Length: 170
Image (cartoon, rainbow, N blue to C red; front, side, top):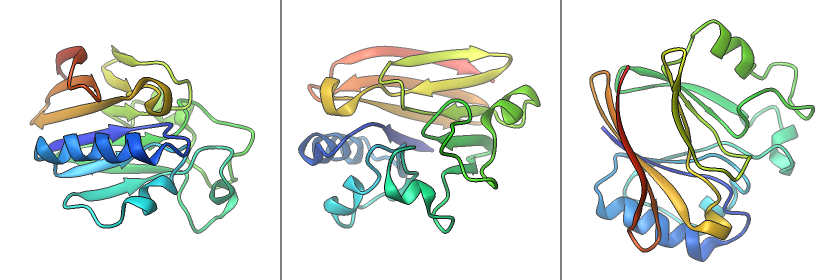
Protein backbone atom coordinates (compact mmCIF):
# COMPACT_ATOMS: atom_id res chain seq x y z
CA UNK A 1 0.00 0.00 0.00
CA UNK A 2 1.27 3.48 -0.88
CA UNK A 3 0.19 6.48 1.16
CA UNK A 4 0.89 10.17 0.62
CA UNK A 5 0.92 12.41 3.71
CA UNK A 6 0.81 16.21 3.90
CA UNK A 7 0.40 18.65 6.76
CA UNK A 8 0.15 22.35 7.37
CA UNK A 9 -0.82 23.63 3.94
CA UNK A 10 -2.28 26.72 5.66
CA UNK A 11 -4.23 27.86 2.60
CA UNK A 12 -1.45 27.24 0.07
CA UNK A 13 -3.68 25.27 -2.29
CA UNK A 14 -1.13 25.61 -5.13
CA UNK A 15 1.51 23.69 -3.12
CA UNK A 16 -1.10 21.18 -2.01
CA UNK A 17 -2.18 20.59 -5.60
CA UNK A 18 1.44 20.11 -6.69
CA UNK A 19 2.09 17.69 -3.82
CA UNK A 20 -1.03 15.63 -4.49
CA UNK A 21 -0.22 15.55 -8.21
CA UNK A 22 3.22 14.11 -7.36
CA UNK A 23 1.64 11.58 -5.00
CA UNK A 24 -0.79 10.48 -7.70
CA UNK A 25 2.16 10.10 -10.12
CA UNK A 26 3.60 7.73 -7.49
CA UNK A 27 0.35 5.72 -7.64
CA UNK A 28 -0.64 6.26 -4.02
CA UNK A 29 -3.71 4.43 -2.77
CA UNK A 30 -4.51 7.11 -0.22
CA UNK A 31 -3.70 10.74 0.56
CA UNK A 32 -3.80 11.91 4.18
CA UNK A 33 -3.94 15.58 5.20
CA UNK A 34 -2.97 16.12 8.84
CA UNK A 35 -4.65 19.50 9.31
CA UNK A 36 -4.00 23.18 9.03
CA UNK A 37 -5.94 23.46 6.80
CA UNK A 38 -8.15 20.44 6.21
CA UNK A 39 -10.46 22.57 4.07
CA UNK A 40 -7.67 23.02 1.49
CA UNK A 41 -8.36 19.44 0.39
CA UNK A 42 -11.91 20.45 -0.57
CA UNK A 43 -10.54 23.05 -2.99
CA UNK A 44 -8.78 20.32 -4.95
CA UNK A 45 -12.00 18.56 -5.83
CA UNK A 46 -12.08 14.85 -6.58
CA UNK A 47 -8.78 12.98 -6.63
CA UNK A 48 -8.03 9.53 -8.01
CA UNK A 49 -6.81 8.35 -4.59
CA UNK A 50 -8.90 7.97 -1.45
CA UNK A 51 -8.47 10.96 0.88
CA UNK A 52 -8.55 11.29 4.65
CA UNK A 53 -8.19 14.61 6.46
CA UNK A 54 -8.25 15.72 10.07
CA UNK A 55 -8.50 19.37 11.17
CA UNK A 56 -5.78 21.39 12.84
CA UNK A 57 -6.33 22.50 16.45
CA UNK A 58 -7.26 26.08 15.50
CA UNK A 59 -9.59 25.23 12.63
CA UNK A 60 -13.29 25.86 13.23
CA UNK A 61 -14.10 22.21 12.46
CA UNK A 62 -11.84 21.07 15.34
CA UNK A 63 -14.68 22.04 17.69
CA UNK A 64 -17.28 20.17 15.61
CA UNK A 65 -17.97 16.81 17.26
CA UNK A 66 -19.16 15.38 13.93
CA UNK A 67 -15.66 15.79 12.44
CA UNK A 68 -13.05 13.43 13.91
CA UNK A 69 -9.97 15.26 15.20
CA UNK A 70 -8.00 12.03 15.39
CA UNK A 71 -8.47 8.78 13.53
CA UNK A 72 -7.14 5.35 14.37
CA UNK A 73 -7.03 3.41 11.11
CA UNK A 74 -5.82 0.06 9.87
CA UNK A 75 -3.48 0.85 6.99
CA UNK A 76 -2.56 -2.41 5.34
CA UNK A 77 -2.37 -4.20 8.68
CA UNK A 78 -0.64 -1.42 10.63
CA UNK A 79 -2.65 0.39 13.30
CA UNK A 80 -2.10 4.06 12.53
CA UNK A 81 -2.89 7.18 14.55
CA UNK A 82 -3.75 10.08 12.24
CA UNK A 83 -3.57 13.33 14.21
CA UNK A 84 -2.64 16.96 13.75
CA UNK A 85 -0.76 16.95 17.06
CA UNK A 86 1.59 14.36 18.57
CA UNK A 87 -0.01 14.91 21.99
CA UNK A 88 -3.25 16.19 23.49
CA UNK A 89 -4.15 19.85 23.02
CA UNK A 90 -6.22 22.31 25.04
CA UNK A 91 -8.70 22.54 22.14
CA UNK A 92 -9.39 18.78 22.14
CA UNK A 93 -12.95 17.64 22.60
CA UNK A 94 -13.72 15.31 25.53
CA UNK A 95 -14.14 12.22 23.30
CA UNK A 96 -10.94 12.75 21.29
CA UNK A 97 -8.43 9.90 21.53
CA UNK A 98 -5.42 10.94 23.58
CA UNK A 99 -2.13 10.42 21.72
CA UNK A 100 -0.16 10.06 24.97
CA UNK A 101 -2.33 7.11 26.02
CA UNK A 102 -2.16 5.48 22.59
CA UNK A 103 1.63 5.83 22.55
CA UNK A 104 2.17 4.80 26.20
CA UNK A 105 0.02 1.70 25.71
CA UNK A 106 1.57 0.93 22.29
CA UNK A 107 -1.88 0.91 20.65
CA UNK A 108 -0.42 2.11 17.33
CA UNK A 109 2.28 0.93 14.98
CA UNK A 110 2.49 4.27 13.16
CA UNK A 111 1.85 7.83 14.37
CA UNK A 112 1.27 10.41 11.63
CA UNK A 113 1.23 14.02 12.83
CA UNK A 114 1.96 17.60 11.83
CA UNK A 115 1.55 20.83 13.81
CA UNK A 116 5.23 21.41 14.67
CA UNK A 117 6.24 22.28 11.06
CA UNK A 118 9.33 20.12 11.60
CA UNK A 119 10.22 17.00 9.61
CA UNK A 120 10.35 13.96 11.83
CA UNK A 121 11.07 10.38 10.97
CA UNK A 122 11.91 7.99 13.79
CA UNK A 123 11.05 4.78 15.58
CA UNK A 124 10.40 5.17 19.30
CA UNK A 125 9.36 2.24 21.52
CA UNK A 126 8.65 0.17 18.42
CA UNK A 127 6.33 2.79 16.86
CA UNK A 128 7.07 4.75 13.68
CA UNK A 129 6.56 8.52 14.00
CA UNK A 130 6.26 10.58 10.80
CA UNK A 131 5.81 14.33 10.46
CA UNK A 132 5.98 15.35 6.77
CA UNK A 133 6.93 18.92 7.64
CA UNK A 134 5.53 22.30 6.64
CA UNK A 135 3.94 22.11 3.20
CA UNK A 136 3.08 25.83 3.00
CA UNK A 137 6.65 27.05 3.52
CA UNK A 138 8.96 24.12 2.76
CA UNK A 139 6.85 22.20 0.24
CA UNK A 140 7.55 18.87 1.93
CA UNK A 141 5.36 15.78 2.05
CA UNK A 142 5.81 12.08 2.82
CA UNK A 143 5.33 8.90 0.84
CA UNK A 144 4.93 5.66 2.79
CA UNK A 145 5.11 2.24 1.19
CA UNK A 146 3.81 -0.52 3.43
CA UNK A 147 4.57 -4.20 2.81
CA UNK A 148 3.59 -6.29 5.80
CA UNK A 149 5.47 -4.77 8.72
CA UNK A 150 8.08 -3.15 6.49
CA UNK A 151 7.60 0.57 5.84
CA UNK A 152 9.69 2.66 3.48
CA UNK A 153 9.30 6.38 4.09
CA UNK A 154 10.45 9.14 1.75
CA UNK A 155 10.07 12.78 2.68
CA UNK A 156 10.26 14.82 -0.50
CA UNK A 157 9.83 18.37 -1.66
CA UNK A 158 7.91 19.73 -4.63
CA UNK A 159 11.04 19.45 -6.84
CA UNK A 160 10.98 15.68 -6.25
CA UNK A 161 14.14 15.87 -4.18
CA UNK A 162 14.26 13.36 -1.35
CA UNK A 163 14.95 15.15 1.94
CA UNK A 164 14.97 11.97 4.01
CA UNK A 165 14.44 8.31 3.26
CA UNK A 166 14.52 5.32 5.53
CA UNK A 167 13.22 1.74 5.71
CA UNK A 168 11.72 0.48 8.93
CA UNK A 169 10.86 -3.00 10.17
CA UNK A 170 8.11 -2.73 12.78
